[in-house]
Length: 178
Image 1 (cartoon, rainbow, N blue to C red):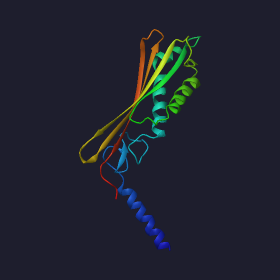
Image 2: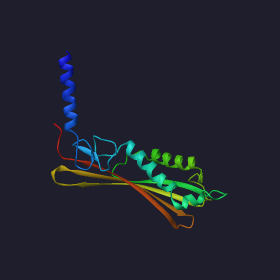
Image 3: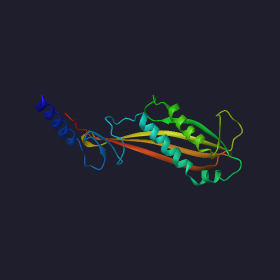
Image 4: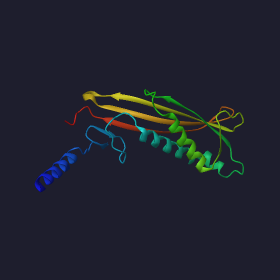
């Protein structure tokens, strides 16, 4: 019995070592993220964690921007509407409300602005957000999936005063593991 357990352990270790990649991206030999240190995945399509990461990273860029840092010095915080998120991906089943909640929650927690309801008619800024995706295909069945979240900040006059974005790239090789 001990030999069987040892054999299974060694086999599994060899299998997992064989899946390691040195092709410039992290992940199995079948699918990986384009950036070192990202999560591994078994599918090229975006998942909930991808959307959460995009929302957190882009909102953090927004909160660290020069314009928002200026708001922190004001006695009266600006009135901000977080507008509806636009889904320009090929997946209409994305839970856009979850992304919206993360963005709005981070802004409220930061305390840099007074966040108003979308129906408000008296505000200083509106934050518009768009989610897009593209697929690129190469020889051998390789697929590159780009998922981008972009934020734009407008004054009440319609003037664009800031723009932030973040992209996740996923790579899927055409080869099968088995």
